[in-house]
Image 1: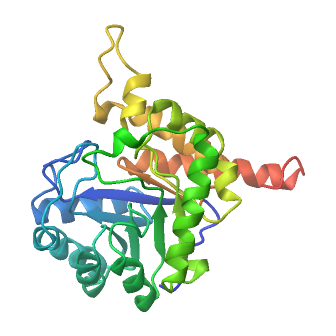
Image 2 (image 1 turned 180 degrees about the vertical axis):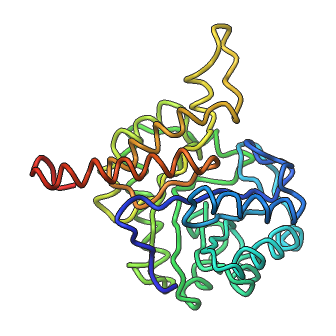
Length: 284
């Protein structure tokens, strides 16, 4: 694959966490065979891309060694890629990305947006691979202390643009870049909703990926009367609603855990947008 998939609707990126500690499904797919089986389930459910990661980036997560990250993801990437599925590698390290690309991955998804490892955008440039640049203010251990904004939409936009400039300066083709506003990364719930309410600011820059699935701001929204947040696995209906809103706003893709309902949502939105274009009520 050269360039970004363009399906005429939002691309559905299914998440496979080969980790013991991810917030949503940590440990469920740590075994390579379990991770591979899960990836194929997501493809059968309608995933266009499988996003494979071996290091949790949930708030407070500790980093792991690169060799452990590679050990986790390499067999999974190879098996899924060998089946003809488009795989993205979710990593902040060039060593891990290099191993994943050698195993068949075709997209780099860097939650640090080129800031954690300057070698990663250089590697992506050399490989000619699409590169997801997420807004980032620091590693998981302390990122939530950096959730301070006077105007979250403007500041995230400006910081993301600087990150994109850095990635392009490293050699990544501008038409290979996807931007991600970083829902939940150095953001509180109010920040996340502001960003989702103003996705047009980001789609005006370029292709946008939204990763809101099952995140804690949805758990807070759906909390019990006593304030207990809704558990991650019980946030899928709200996640689908956010997917529909993001697709209606014209994003390039959504990154989700439960693929089938989200894939249904993007197809429904695509039909709605097409009808609006036909009757001239919106540019689509």
